Amino acid sequence: MRGEKASAAGEALLRRLKRLVARASTAKGDDRKQLLALLDDVETTRRGLLRECAEIEGEMRQATVRTTAIGAYLRGSQVHRGKRHN
Image 1 (spheres, rainbow, N blue to C red):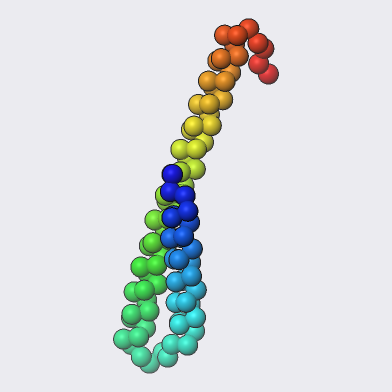
Image 2 (tube, rainbow, N blue to C red; image 1 turned 90 degrees about the vertical axis):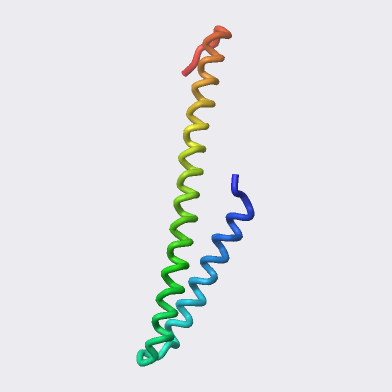
């Protein structure tokens, strides 16, 4: 599992996005180079956040599969021991 490292990476991306939003609010509309650089930075950060979301979604899917398997194993083991299952 990714754990604390992944959480720190996601938090860093969110902080970067907030800084970029603040930078965008002070950017002048006539400075084309600054605006292009800002757009590139925002797009890079957005892609990083999307990657983080996809990884988290995969982990959640995997946890769901594991939970289902554990439940099935538990029900099966209770049947073999002669216990009723609800």
